[in-house]
Image (cartoon, rainbow, N blue to C red; front, side):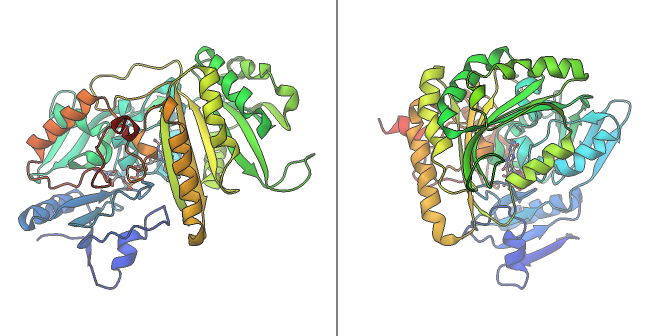
Length: 461
Ligand SMILES: Cc1cc2nc3c(=O)[nH]c(=O)nc-3n(C[C@H](O)[C@H](O)[C@H](O)COP(=O)(O)OP(=O)(O)OC[C@H]3O[C@@H](n4cnc5c(N)ncnc54)[C@H](O)[C@@H]3O)c2cc1C
């Protein structure tokens, strides 16, 4: 094998660090690949794929290691860790940025800002493009800007046959379609993304209001009533979390409901207009904190994300696309915001309304106008059961309003959920049968009895 990079075989010194050292979730999997390969470059990826083919080893892939369920660490075969594939280059004429899969938004965002541009990358800046884009990519202001995968002009992909190909709207269109939504079910190694960019917003502003948890239900209901009519330049969220302290409120670890609206406008006037509807919150007089119309920027927003998503924690995360009337959704959902299992955990309501149509040129195909996710993090392994059980119960509780799930915040070992349309799931499997007939690449991580792409609660009835 003509491989220039580093390889750690099971049992060798350095293997354990290679296996999980770059994994964000410290709830470490007890799964052990035969070896971990760190390719130096694209040619090394080709060599590794050929080696796996010759030895009938399966392949798992890691770009940034941020998959909550740790999809990259699998029992059979080899793990290709793409950490060295992290180059960025930019064409100032086409405004297309070429970024390799291990590039994080932390690298891409400041790089593009120098050119007055942005890319709707992941909220947490340490997520890598590899996993993020393959599953759809719910980036900054997804309700207005769409899915990040829509911005992929082309991809360079090493196929299961060990061949490097370009996939775009005119060539290898089957791979181009499947790679934009199949997530960890994709059957090739993307070595480079060619991405369209957007002008950087010139006047990012925000309004943030903090309420007692007693207001969870009316706030969730009101947000659902108004969200489709708010300017699409606004990203809006409702967060249930615990804050260490709050001015004017006695005690510590105070559970709260936060409404946060962030604009992607170009002038202060536009931003103020976009944020104006939030001033009419029907329970505003109950707010602990009311901070309206303040200037902000990506750097500040990234810092907030890094604070909310600390390293070296154990994480259990799950999500749902919601459907139902504002009364029903707010009533069913509010326990997820006000009964959090520990002071670090948080729940998120994220608007996608008015729902943009998804192009049929990509596998990604399931969304509703409200996205919900709970992020449960803790440090002590003795608390594993308590935290996991809380999340499991919440996911069960919201089944009546659940339409499916986003792969980015999913764990099929805890709950089987639908993530693409039935037709698209079938098409992914058909393309896979042609492109990866020997099933060289690992696919979705789930329990043996999980039916992939089905809501498990619909199967059992
Ligand atoms: C703190 C945090 C915040 C997050 N915020 C967001 C967010 O705002 N929006 C959002 O959409 N998601 C978000 N996520 C979810 C995240 O996007 C997914 O977990 C994503 O899969 C992570 O990508 P990764 O490359 O870092 O992870 P990895 O674990 O390295 O990759 C996940 C899987 O993707 C596939 N893959 C990755 N790279 C390639 C490649 N080059 N070729 C082929 N297959 C590949 C593999 O199957 C791999 O196992 C967040 C996750 C965390 C931990």
